[in-house]
Image (cartoon, rainbow, N blue to C red; front, side, top):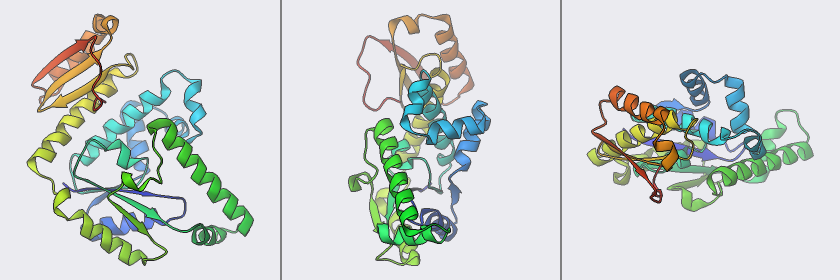
Length: 269
């Protein structure tokens, strides 16, 4: 049930390394297909979902609650995939989307600007064009993460392992990641499995509520769900029907309570 997330800067060979790690460990790999799966599951046009997620942060201010809705859908889809375990994920902010799971091995790949520019030049760009494009991409990713998660993607404290591929060969980087993923702190204990199932329930319920009740927060522990909602929301028939249907359709739910007028816990989704 091991879970590995690989974050990287532009042209830091993240895709290649992720594929090799998955191949060596015989893990499944998730990347761009996460958006396709989300699109299919929640009936959102793929181009619309991809544009809203990857465009400049300002896109979210053009539509009410778009950011919250799409991210809730993506997170629910990702948790459903990783709950099966043995996954390498390199894509949209995996280390942040899965930040509630203690057994996720979070990796960051880095490379010097010079080496990244050389890779970009191979696509037919001049050195100036390549450098400009990479710096623009880096700034876009940084702003995107700061806007949505209030975090700097280059902050090394967000990761368990940071590997500079200028100093290690790609094969060495793959070996380091594989060795780290098998260490004891990342073993899928029964407690970790329960936390994953609880997070899956919480994220799935959040996905059900987010469009109509975006301010609702959800926590789950051992199948016991707490929903933190506004007084007005909790009294509507639509809200009650959503909760009732969810509880009936999910056998893992032991109890479901709604709290109003209480501060939402930091770990709520």
